[in-house]
Image (cartoon, rainbow, N blue to C red):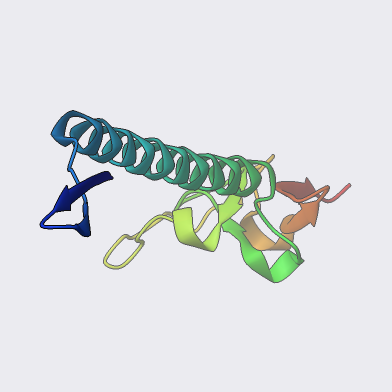
Length: 119
């Protein structure tokens, strides 16, 4: 602010400092970039955590689990990872150590799909 006298009248004049204005604008832009970056990092961590949780928890109930192969399965997987068995023909034998002929079933044990074979 600059005060001058002209014809006996005090005149107040605002003097702009362009350098200061540019510095303030630059700092605001840098602040915006920092906030944007922190927000993106936070979102990426949330996605990472959700991916880790889904890798640990395959199932919650036995109905979430299905045989892992179309013919003579000996292991189980989630419904989402189940094989497409449409048009697949299997032999009618009851292979030992498999889920064939009711020898076992798929169970959710400790949030993992497992084949439980009968005795």
